[in-house]
Length: 117
Length: 111
Image 1: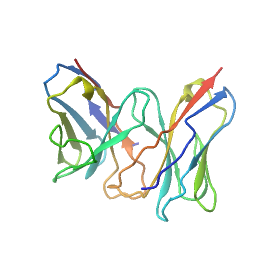
Image 2: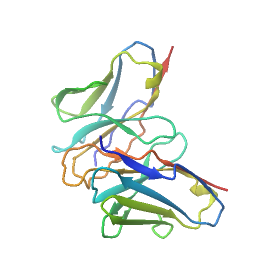
Image 3: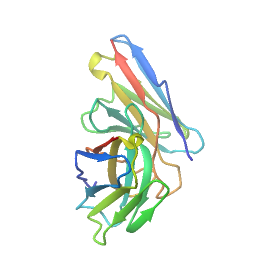
Image 4: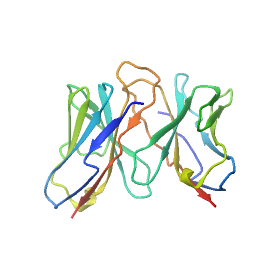
């Protein structure tokens, strides 16, 4: 089946630095990818929709200047957490559906655990 | 986007059949119902998807009544490894359609 891969799976960074998380669709093309954040014992919260070749669409309350999204190709979207702070520590998950295929399920990456110290 | 309501948690024992019901009173005509499973520190994994009546695959069955305002995920003979959070989502299947997660149901399977 289709695979979505995230890298890195875990990252620890110092407060004030930036961290980039990659999301790749390995065997299909995706014009749209989605980024979620999940805090412990909570559900996934949609942060933004990444659109290939255009600007991302952010959900209400998500700072677009803090969470930079780039979707430069049909198989890669990146999320950069800028000037990270401890409260940004969370589990970040991306997902994608195959371009041009209707009614298919969304595929999720394995997630990235970000710890800001 | 349709909102879903599920029980927060359920308990079961190994070998039992587990049925998790989800309410989605505002489901739209072109919405599908999809269930995902999530283990700790992993991304959600697709279980099953349906539009109406009954769908069955190798891991689960999905029952959808005629009014489609609810659905039931049925897991036959659960094992300890089925302990996870199960999410019910509704939405149309377009590639650009975003999925909004509800609270999910934490299923705890005991020996």
